[in-house]
Image (cartoon, rainbow, N blue to C red; front, side, top):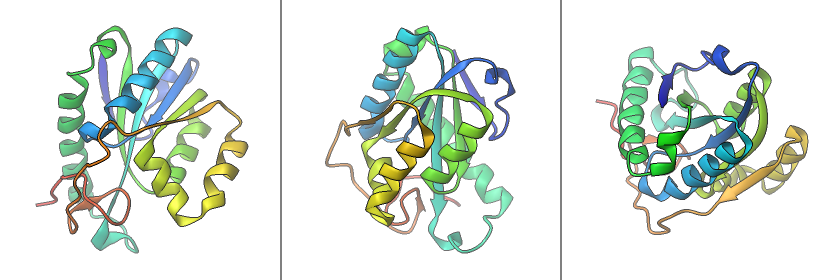
Length: 178
């Protein structure tokens, strides 16, 4: 059963173990969703899918609320289409949270709010974190102190279109902000 959440609205999972999956909303992220779902199912944990995003024109400024709302709406739609093709998710309770910010910052903010028992990161999100500082990912994994998995991309040839909504400062998640 899917729950689309507003960031910070995770009170329903405060007392449950949570598997956190940091992912994009493109077909190349399907394997990360499957890995996280399998882990959550086997550990009887709640599943939170986190989609961190940035908008290139606003990396140094605050993103206008209407633009953030539009990106979240589009991300929810794309995520719903993606999850409809993953049968294991029909057996799980999960939330999808689209939140502006760098992947490592959004992970850290959720770890402070919920009892995360494992983290699954889509390969592309891990690459985004590592691209800024190769030691950041190792340091964060150590700091978080929970099992951590990087799930390989299902489609290594995912296309990127500059100038739209980005979650890695360079490439598009094919969402528009019009």
